[in-house]
Length: 307
Image (cartoon, rainbow, N blue to C red):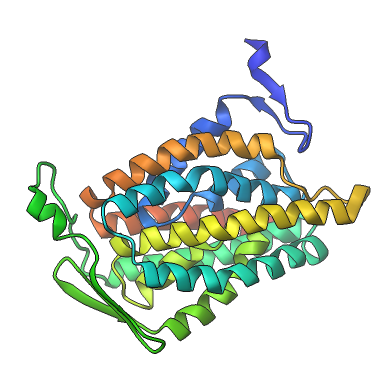
């Protein structure tokens, strides 16, 4: 069995070869229900348990997103729960921000201790927003039951989408939802910067904002958030690799592609199943799952900075 215990040459991480995909599968199954890839939890796992503390861990996280997200996005598209105007606004807003964030990560947050504090503050805010929304929300049941008819399945598809520069409107499960593309663009640009620093693509921050502030149902937010994370992660992974070429031997910046691919293999399966099961899980339960995970890691990182 010793041959299954490997050392990854780029990152120097030593672990059993089956650990990354198993961890990624478990994490992404639950987080993908809320439109989050799970990269925000895999990063502290890599830093704290695998000892992967160099800036290249952010790029490796982006590789995980690139490999894992397509299966979840495919499922949301197939089930008619992708709000395309929201998706394109997310992509246009976060893409430039992710380049700025990657540059900030390399130049100003290379120290693992400072990076943990930054990551902890970001996660603490996300978790607090989710907790508040779950507490104040009406809860909400699952949007589908096992064995539902085809007519019932069609009733939970996104329909009647209307787009203008000032307003986007769509219908879902008998309700009409609207949002301002301008405000979403501004928010996602800022989120892109933070996501680029943290190496998560921004989905973990975007999804809670849409649910808590813009009052969109989590069932329609998930697909758009994952698609936006996928596009920005492709750009982020490439940018981190280019920065590695630019910096040379001075600092390890480029992604560990093999480690990222192993995480991605588990995430690919987990996201597909998570997206498939999402409609059977109450929205409040999804929020509470995300909230618990996020706050645990956030408190651990922030408190650890002062020890």
